[in-house]
Image 1 (cartoon, one colour):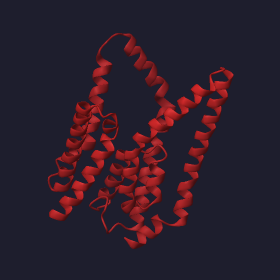
Image 2: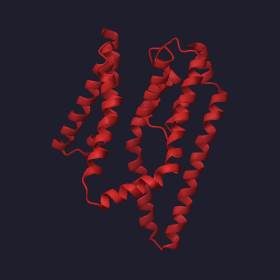
Image 3: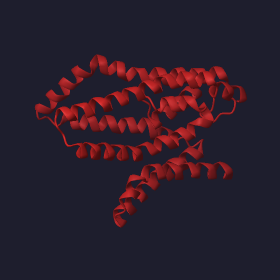
Image 4: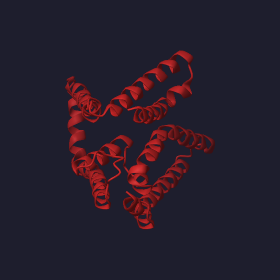
Length: 239
């Protein structure tokens, strides 16, 4: 594990991960500049533009909190820099952790947190995570226009198939990513974490509606993640 962390936290990995992150930051700054330029061409009020930018920035902070928590959770298993890269560029907290866990279990390890992970296994996990992330932009570039045309055509036809199909696909995705792991009773910690996290979200949303505390509803997801992680620590010490 020590050798693996030395590689994962090395300066070389830092610079490799920093390159795409800097490119994404540069792209974001470019889009902001182009947006501001366009508002001037449209003669929009400067005060209104600043208000929109401020509100957008503030509203982006809350959805990012679960990502920060996931980053902290992945760092002990994958080092400091690879989770930073994967959760900054295209990455998703749920998909990245699931992808890394599946890669490790396929290689014969127990999953994330296995102390016997080698450097070669870490490199394999990084390749899997990064390769999978490339598939979606390529798929969109090739087939998104055709898919969008057919989707709009089905919506114009007035049939109720598309809403049902979209709902079925979403439920199927959640079933595969969540319930298949929940019912792994050989690992009671995962079952407890799933139950605590789900119950916490429901209870926090319920109390937010009852008390009319808007911030409680906005923070329900990151708070539920923290409570679920605390339950994992408690169960690990008890069992």
